[in-house]
Length: 269
Image 1: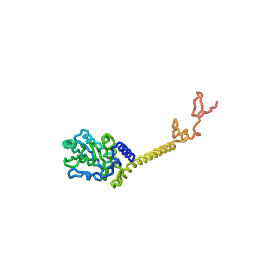
Image 2: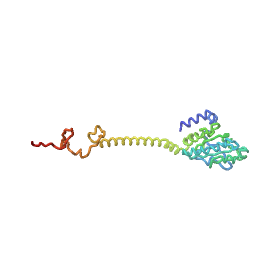
Image 3: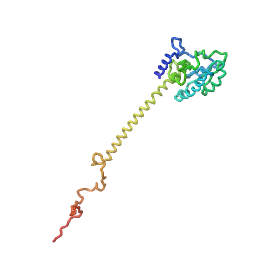
Image 4: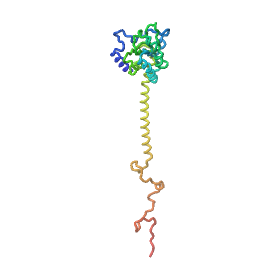
């Protein structure tokens, strides 16, 4: 997890898509206060990872981005990333406000799409954002990633990777909400491997024991005189094993070369 986040940060940083320390970065700082009417959306998601998408209702591709947030959310949910809040903020222009219902219709179920009022301070400007930007906040409300075009397109893996990193890692540190999350993540990564190795080792021992039992059973089942463990071609009859060869009658050859079972008698002249 740590290696993947480092790769992501390096790539986005080199591309100029994430703020750096040289230009007074907002990374790891709390989100600036922004409101929609009397509502403060970021306060509602405190304690959760928060994904804020800046999408324009008058932009066709933004509608596609909004629709693709559904499969992304489902994929992450199936992976166990459930404590995430998704937010869409529409552009403040008059055309975008007019087409706001269209953007709301493309958004996944239970994902709020906020419509900015014409007389309020522009949320996009407060967040230093532009069309199609994705801002990822940790559980303490601090910005971890600000992903801009073209890497914010959801057919690229960067938004998903940023959410994964923010979900499992206390990237900005000292956020108490990550104490149990980090521990559970480590357990989930280690336990299946240990269980698999233990199961494989147990199965190997069982197979070895089974083979030894089979060999032992074969040795006990083979009688003496079987020629090194091979079965005789003609099994001996139990009655013949009991008879003593010394008491068997001796057969003598007749004229025709046949044996006779009866003793010969001498007759007088």
